[in-house]
Image 1 (cartoon, helix red, strand yellow):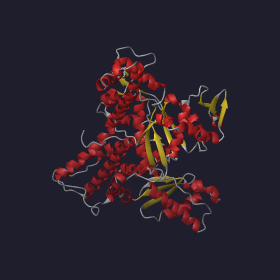
Image 2 (cartoon, helix red, strand yellow):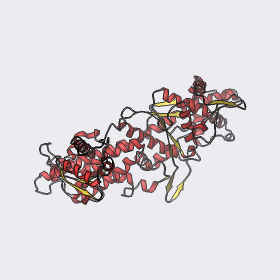
Image 3 (spheres, helix red, strand yellow):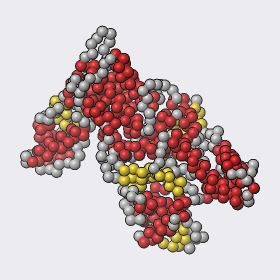
Image 4 (spheres, one colour):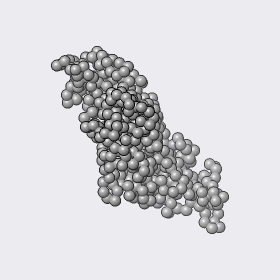
Length: 553
């Protein structure tokens, strides 16, 4: 019995009391069931009686007693106690609690998946670094978190489109092209240009691929380096993302918004909504009506359209392509974009609290031997995604970057994350998985297995260590649903660390296999079911984070 099953049983108990005329309340759509920290308080607790007491016109304990009488008659419930002002503490019988192991094994990869977000269409945009250089460490964080977010949202039933926005239409692209031209001609980079080995590498690749390019005029060279250099840089970004295990459904070009006339059309649509005005020969969007600190320029006095105008067209494009929610994941230096993006949605007639969401990620730094690492050999002044992969590996990077709330600044300690110690969180979780696989291999060597469903006796999973693991396995669907609803994939990682800890304690205190001439017992079989169930959940969780579940380490 999972917490969701128990929640439904309590709802049914409330409904039964209402039908019997004992309670005059509306049956709650959801009943919160939690696992108490003190196991003396039972397997699960709920405060539903306190929530219903006022509407029922009864003391909370009286409501609790009405519900307790009904819950005590449910198959699998061993005991129901009333505590404090009216909490219901529920204890399951060992057979019902242990049966969860079979449920998990039979569900396999599907265990934990839910329909909390079924029908919700989300456009999830993340990374979106300018295509003028390699992905830097801030973008690496979004690559890990964004991809995990997409997996978690899909596991909760959402229809998710992942998207990378290529800022390929602005001034920075001209600077990029000028930097490539300078490098190809053996000159220093222009002021405010781009430097680093990657600029030299791309310039050389282009001169090798396009013989005679340096014989062209300066302006013609610039156009070649702009067009072809951008293609090579985007290809390099895609390669890095692929190596990191992050894949996008859509690579969206900002340039197409301008070339197609979408920016002009967006301004016209916003004007129809009544929020566009002109002042000093410029065109503005009145975003202050919706919480922005100042109105934003769409078209400058010289007729040039602003980045903000493209932002507005891009948001409308997402909505036109069917997204109910446009979810943006931006770096810490984009904090000022939150209100203006939400104002675009409001000016377009959308619900700024529903149709658009903006997540801000804080900074990341790396340490080696206690000292902060600041430089990259290839990029010159930033740490790149390739550096991160080389120094700590994809699994360690993805797990560590996804295990913390995006609101917090995090540090990647190279020495720690390449160590095989319990202080290394990704090793701690992956090692638990290898231990479970090791049990399965040893069982195969001994010629034993967990047996059939009919041979499984869940009531034998009765020790405190087995109960702790079972209780935590039961929580996985709720953790996953909450992670999706709150857009917080780090909850999955923290759950896995707790589960790994409970399994490590189980491993140290319970024998899974017979020793010596000992016969395989029903207790051994039951524990092998539990091991397989725990391995399943650990693997499911790691998959949601885009991290491998190794069988050996």
